[in-house]
Image (cartoon, rainbow, N blue to C red; front, side, top):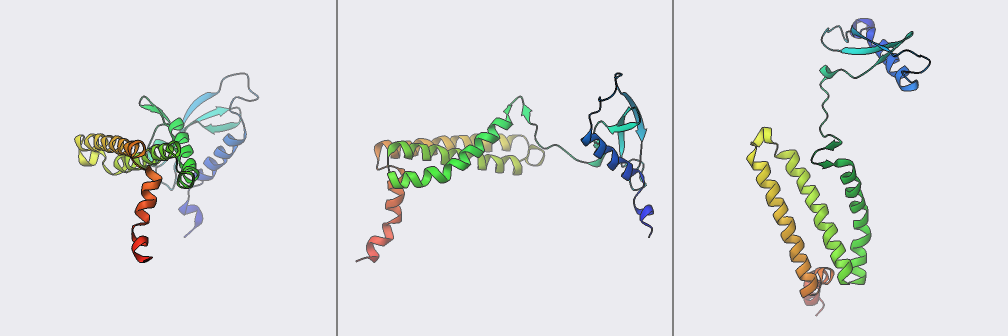
Amino acid sequence: MNFERMINRNIFRKIRQLESFSKTNIFSNSSKPPQIARTSTTLCGINRCLNSNTITNGNNNFLTKFPASIGLQQSRNVATPAGDHVRLWVFEKVVSVALPVVIPLAFVMENAVLDGIMSVLVVIHTHWGLEAVITDYARPRVVGPLLPKVLHATLILLSVATLAGLFVLIHNGPGVATSVKNFWAIGKEKSSK
């Protein structure tokens, strides 16, 4: 089969447009605003496969947006009315980086402050992980609108109860790190005799 039959020549023109768009500014070297022209191009010989808007600025044609007919979807918005996901993502990464530092310190130093910090970080990290699982697998389109809300509410209650239980263990008991060490030592006491 001939290569030109497999791929339409318009794809190479679109690639050149993308390359020139990434290297230059649309409004450079021109005092008048660019004109938007509607052009219809084809990819792979299918007319409905790639329709796009281009901006003409002198002799250069630039893509203004990627076509919506390709099927690419944006899964999450960067900023939504529910909150700023960029800051949350940064905070999630800070918690993930702090965990490998705080956990060994809590086991070596064994004090209430490090136990509290470790408990908060572990519960937050686990909460976000389970929340992502619920969001990904309990979609309202698949399981209905009620089940995701119930699962999210249950997760919040479990996270709060877990954190409260760990705080009770820290303030009224031996502490989280000491309790884990005692649990690890259960089998060692009998085998050493």
